[in-house]
Length: 213
Image 1 (tube, rainbow, N blue to C red):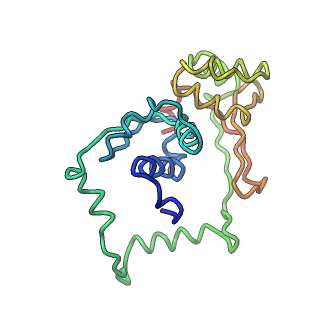
Image 2: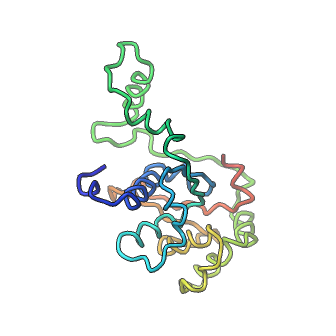
């Protein structure tokens, strides 16, 4: 944990850990439900906090794009986390296979840390623009945002506060959304600002998500 974050109270520190975990594993967590186990019972009431502001409000808003459940486990029963945090750091054996895999992974980057293979295309007739657009408009959580993007007007938060998790997540990302060839997409830009990595990603309807996993 960064030095400045070590002064946080227990509740904020646990919440910060959840925010950081979702940031690191974001690509794997978006669109699928997951469970966050904690021995800090106060986090169970995360979504019922009253009059949140400042960093706490920002963190909670960042978590709104994920579908997750918080479950409390007594500290004495959450021994796996303690075991991982207290595991001694020992040098690896010369023939360590995990280290070998990391070395092989390094071969996929150039000297500047860029991917040597940046993109590839897969053609699938079942994912033509018309069928995807129809599926998006038939999806009850995507369609409200689809229509809003089509009109070019972002709904007020009060209009979507009672909607599902996917709708609220898309609302947060509204400025990154666009309609291309009738299909709702999200503009992805690399943190480095390199336009080579920029992509328009399809907002996948729920009934098609299983085909991508």
